[in-house]
Amino acid sequence: MPSPAIPEKPWHDPLTIDLLLKVLNTTFLHPFVAWMIPLCLRAQATPYHHPAMLITAAWATLLTLLYFLSILNQRVAHGNPRAVDLSEEVIVVTGGASGLGLLIAEVYGLRGASVAVLDVREMEVGEARGVEFYKCDVGDREQVEKAAKEIEEDLGTPTILINNAAIAHGKSILDLTNDEVERTFRVNLLSHFYTIKAFLPGMIRQNRGTIVTISSALAHLGCRNLSDYTCSKSALLALHASLTAELLPAHRETIKTLLVTPGQFSTPLFAGIKTPSPFFAPILEPVDVAKEVIKAVDAGEGGVLAMPLYARWVDWMRVLPAGVQRVVRWWSGVDVAVEGFVGRRGEGVEKEKEILFEG
Image (cartoon, rainbow, N blue to C red; front, side, top):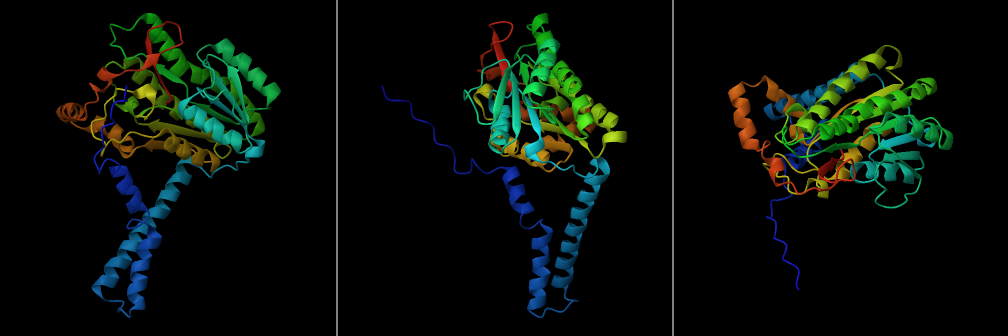
């Protein structure tokens, strides 16, 4: 029986606002490129007082000023980057048996770092070079403490913690059982407390570390049929801010905190979830998110990674008038996106449909 034909995508399908912005940032909005224009004009003997010369020089000066102000803003907010030597780092990735977590773990394993994956599921790839698997329900404090001791004995003191594991059930508040709500908060929120309390003391002793908290763009919005997920992810925003404030006085330069708020991933776990506009709200490839997280961790930076573009501005929704917010929610389809969710059967407490998110 022949397989069904795959519908052809329109020619403009790869075109997104994020792609356009990326092109602009490497051309028209890049200070180096901007300075090429007045230099070329001057090479053609254009007078300094010529309008074209003045306008292009002013534009290049503005972009240069904004570039250095962005660097200054990063340094004031998060301090100087810490030195990262992968040969001396021990990396812990929760929920690293598949998806985003697995990508990050594999990359660091191939690059020579010692990597420990904590997950209740077996790794999708079986074994990965440089990656040690520890079967652990991160929502169980005792299991986390046991795994932490084993990692310390096997690999050394962890210096990079990537809290990636998360679940949701895709049900209305009334359909959610109490056990499901409690499990979501254990995995999505309490696990962060368990892992931070288990690994942060070692980072303080080593005087170096990075803690990555993976939240979600939906943490700023809430969403129908994802109340457990969005509430737990919203709490992570406050946890990241509080943790950063607590580390600020004594460990500002040595222990970095990184918050990641991604949009929708293009994995089977999100099958059936609709995006309102492929142009304004493109679906993320896990590899693209992994590259940004790895880039920030390698650079020893702290701060916030929000992607795609709308995720950087979605928290401004709260300052809009209530009526405008309602119109935007209707236009975006955020409250009906989960209705067509396909999902996959979970391996957790119950055999009901359970969505597992990598962030």
